[in-house]
Image 1: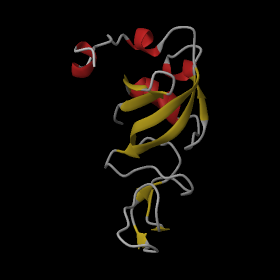
Image 2: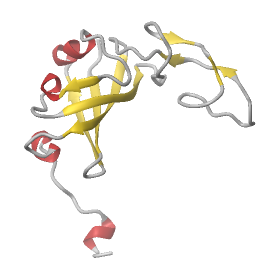
Image 3: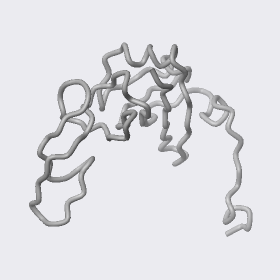
Image 4: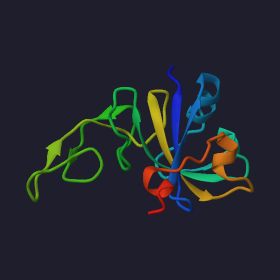
Length: 140
């Protein structure tokens, strides 16, 4: 099993943070029977007081998770737009390989969004220092 990279989007600060969960921690997530759109308590991923919602992710081979694709693992549905397909003409439909909406052991990246914030900010919990970008340092 691979480590799980969690990408946490915070809509209040408009920043995203990464947290890597090792194999024992990731096993808890895989065993919860989660899907794209499911809510997760922050305690499950060591973020006390937070509530998160799963917005997507990708598997170990790089295929994106797509809501509405049932089952476990990869599938080749006929798609006309949305996640996992880029059409060139209006009305174009193609069979493409995507990962189902279920979170399983083949997922390597899981994208989540903060729904309810905890008492401490994410940057403090994850130990991220606030760096100023080029434009912010120049006062623009």
